Length: 418
Image (cartoon, rainbow, N blue to C red; front, side, top):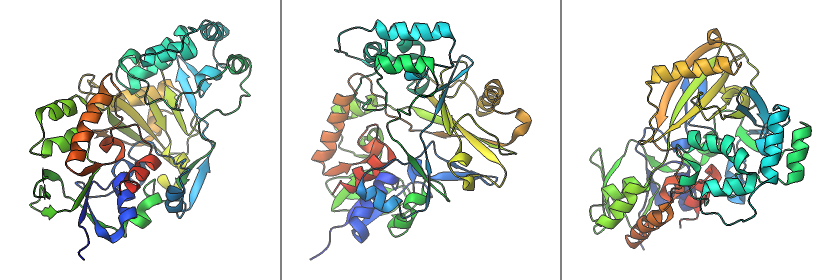
């Protein structure tokens, strides 16, 4: 009996999760010349940088059985925030001690005077209910514009889950009076490979798979069950699994109905400009990663690859990577060189380092960063996914499911696709 020919489009972590489950029966096609997708990395003059921040806090036994084969370092999730000249422990809502007393009073009053109804229809209303209008506007409201590139009222609340800590009034009061507060992050530890960057967690299984690099899918014929690639290759399939972003896969299926194309065209995600900086010496940073609320500073968050693992930087040196988010409607409006100058200026302003401490600086862009949960997105997503299902295409991963998935969830999305 002939074994089914299973084609997987995309060799990011979701595709690799599917490939791991399927073994030799699957062939993965990746448009880039390296597998790994957003979990891949690059090197500049001996400094290794991941494509955006990655730390694992996976609890799934399948993921741990793969990731834990790689020696790793364990980090406590102790992040910092910067706002208007002050460094504050994360999350701000129950760690306001380092802020001026007048600001702490306003934050406490904000919590006390919260609206009593829990019925919320958008993210702004949710923030007001959880934290009060003053805090909601000054802290997560500002961060929303930097991270999601829109206003809080433009977002639904489906994505929140446990990402936003909801303290009691006792915690708010305690955190206003002392910085000896417990860590309330949603995980107690995070893991990172000792060597090789984040992709080292899954390289040992990916290297056993049939991955065809430099193959960009340009047409899918669902009737003939064929995928055509930009290099002239044509692959027949019995089963098709795709981690391609929903707006992209619908463009290469010839018989996509107009209503599906319209729904897919409305789906959008933020893009990320990654500004990666290598320093000449081992600089002590505020924390492994930190969030920045100041709207005159371009990046929303930053993190240190060299703190994640000393293998990410040459001996005696250190590194930071900065994320600047943008969309077509909200572009950066700066050239890469201008953006780098802004980042250097911000490094000085935050008193992290001096310009002369910098050895290398590199800017590159990721087209897809985070799915934006605009009002109506869930309906548009459903329309597209139901169409793909009708064509017997299983869509997986962050941009295949069009959801806010962490790397472990993306791996399981692929693994559970069969």
